[in-house]
Image (tube, rainbow, N blue to C red; front, top):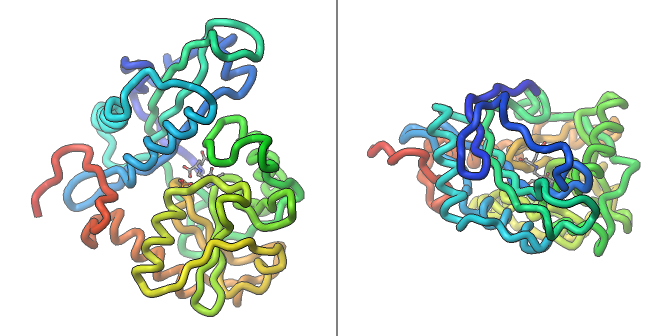
Length: 312
Ligand code: PPE
């Protein structure tokens, strides 16, 4: 999935040119994976550009940092405003927003406490995360031979850069084998999540997604889909899913800020249903995009306008 550069990146309070947004090679983050980050989308709506669930993403960023004993040297509102300002400065109508908090240059060795906590925010144009056409046609995936991290090792509730070494193993294996993505199981063999997405299965009109204890990121899109599905009258359960449950589900789909609602057509070459996009998946996709595009009322207050919302 190609991306489109923007002009300026916010680095610790200042805008610098995209090509000059550098850090010291001895920054703690380079050696030990000390970064906590977020990713969210800003959508073009009829009332102007708006970020989807910006507040919740910033809240999760602070939670991730709390787990790793990192104090962000800015108030939440300052980071939130800086995200909006970065979109405005880059004149983006629609983009992906990536705030990152990391330990910079100060000391060597594992102990992070003498390395400063730095914050940066970049925005770029990003198309469909799992390939052109993924949202309409669905993707073919494999169950990974790599497990997601075990409880009490790498905290799954923290969106830490280091966790993405595990994600990379899952992704690389899938790509090398000709799949768009991998589904990881947890260390007990239950379904966990994709390398960068949460997962849902649908059976007899009931949605099921792994609970937070199954080494998943507490996805904000996951939460949005749980809310929307319940509003549409579906039952939603958070339950452990055995691997084989994937093969016999009526529908399976991924959720994520980047992946949005991506249907899964095949798992290990076995068709999900008949391999085409499921009706409930489609219905949830439509509901989700009706809100992100501003076509339907933002009844949950999920949109933060980049500028003043244009009155209807
Ligand atoms: N699990 C993982 C491991 C994950 O990385 C993401 C988001 C999710 C679940 C879904 O969370 P949420 O975005 O809050 O619904 N992955 C981000 C990074 C993707 C990347 O390649 O970078 C994203 O979707 O922005």
